[in-house]
Image 1 (cartoon, rainbow, N blue to C red):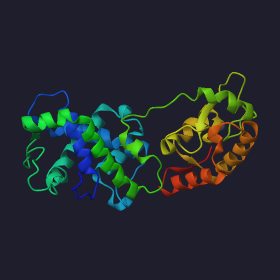
Image 2 (cartoon, helix red, strand yellow):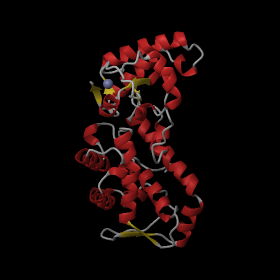
Image 3 (spheres, helix red, strand yellow):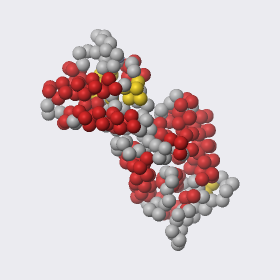
Image 4 (cartoon, rainbow, N blue to C red):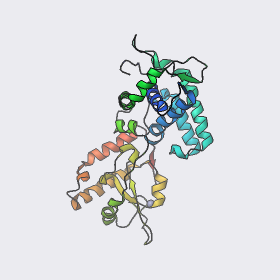
Length: 294
Ligand SMILES: [Zn+2]
């Protein structure tokens, strides 16, 4: 990885996929189908949930990202588990094909002389072969190898996503872990005048307001009070992970000033107003889906 010439993130992705496929298997081959399936899994969240860019410009975006984005849009899903089985199988097959085109051969290209290969593969073969020594190496070094792959992957993404926060965590995460927002409900209720932050509709007596992240959770990867507002369930689900229009940002900043007066000691409110604005504009600059209106 240290010597790898990286024009895309396929090399760290393949290293992670190899480590995962070897786990729990005694075979001396790994099918391209299995590797393709791991590729889908590895790139899905980064592309669909975190909107990370794997290339310097959209026109140079890697095929893996384009295929995943197309499948997500076609079926209207953000969660890989919600992708219909046939679409998932088709995507995995395309990934397996992609491996044959420009990933498997390129992987060892910048390997220093004398360093053994991790696998052997010839064009046309449906599987890569690994010997017992490599199997043992991959199995016994699973954690450090994933760390090395993630480090190089994240380092690459720092250049292609300059303003995205928490890139390391976005690369490491295998699934979206979300904390419960319930503890915030009481605080936010005191301050919302009983109205949805977006459409201003009054919550009915029987309606429990939902908590929404104004700047999407999947961009920030945290739940700070300064970003949380009460919303009706209709606004919350239609907004999804979009950025609202700028007027919502101004209202958020004003709301936070008021919250700060009431809750002086709440640590997550100590963020300066202009930092909230910078984060909003950072999301805009990475072309986060934006300007949702209720
Ligand atoms: Zn609403």
